[in-house]
Length: 400
Image 1: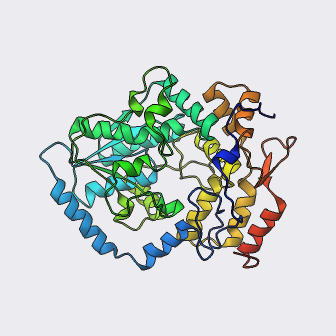
Image 2 (image 1 turned 180 degrees about the vertical axis):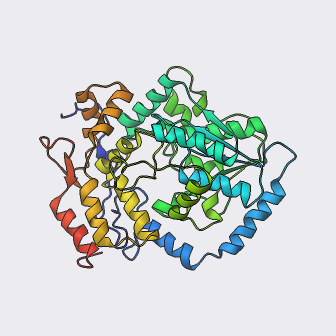
Image 3 (image 1 turned 30 degrees about the vertical axis):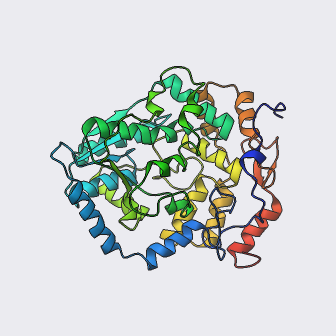
């Protein structure tokens, strides 16, 4: 369905790469991913992986963290707040903060747009297995959905309400309990490479958040001004204490998702899905939210990377997946919108099929993807010449 003129911003207003399209020679991520600057044929995430493996002294980083924790301890109920979803990385972070670093830990969870059954069970099992208390934050449903739909129509970003609510909600919990440290899990550099807008040190500043992914640099008040109802969960709390520190645990410990999964299963009660997650070949990554696959499908429509692209990148960098295996996984899953994920999105947003497809199609990146209307749920696919270019790079041929 063609969109009406001037109904939405065009893809050219959101993405205008003006550069030759290519793929990382190690993990096959396209350079059309936002912040996807390549050097020597490597994406930012792979370059940072080399830095993790060869340049960073992790014993020094651990000592730095211990010093920060020692200096910030207060005589309150909790030393540190860890945002968790019940998944492997947040669970691992909270477990390590309690058992390795001896902190009094409180965890908090911003409810995802659409809880999965396994995700909600894992969150409950986390508290039961670890003994770490958890606060569940559930924003008002209609406002939450309205912000997500605005994100979908104006940014092609159907989880805008979730991402934009994380920082304000965690800061409110930290303020309410007088907790001096919020310890997030992994920094974006694990997947996207270091961004110039981010603080390169250990401490996260407020400007770092505002210039990153949360509102894409937009003023939250401006973004929220036409949302009716209670939007306080997306507003930064006033009069925050000056001693609040925010950090990423991945700044202090070499990040490895496979290790985190093992610890989370053994110590935190995490249970993977019994089958592969929709849109990929894994069963333990991002399993708390049934809207996640649709969210990542929109990343494919806009930028050419999807849920499976992220999983392939992690496995190529951390777990020894060959580029031959990666190509097979990518071509099997990346262009597919599972019926279950499409129906989840249609139900959640309370839209008809034509309404949802109009919102999807407006973000079609015609520089990257062909569109085949009669190939239902596999309508967007890489242009043949770009598909071949990726295959050539995977086999060490062609430009990189």
